[in-house]
Image (cartoon, rainbow, N blue to C red; front, side, top):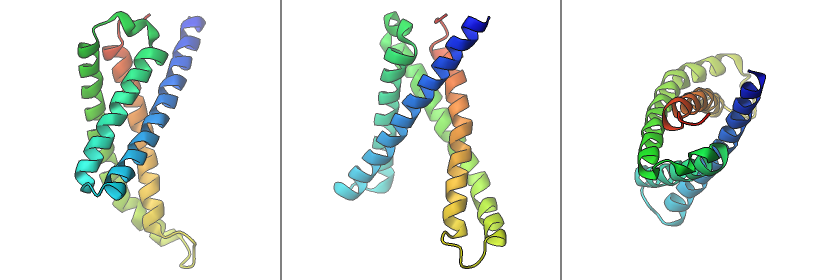
Length: 151
């Protein structure tokens, strides 16, 4: 049991590292498309999110779950994409739920001359909460559905 547990911990860490790379790709490409190429923000976000999901799928298939390389690519990618889109919806819901409340909270506890305002802090704490929740959703949904045939 401890061997399986250790292996799953390693997979989770790899999954999280892949997620960090995807986040960097998402943010970087969003800014490149939006600021560099003048693409509208919603379209730029759709493109950057899609490319980040594809990046994450490839790295998770090849590195996190290398035993899955023999499974059908399209089926596996479709499952991964669906989990990611649900994760995006969860992310948006959590952000929308926490953000206004945290802004009000930080507005009431921060001194007026604090170097960051309550909006910046509220946004970033909300993003962090949503990201952590979605990390676990994405990992377990993919582990037990997309990559379920892996020991």
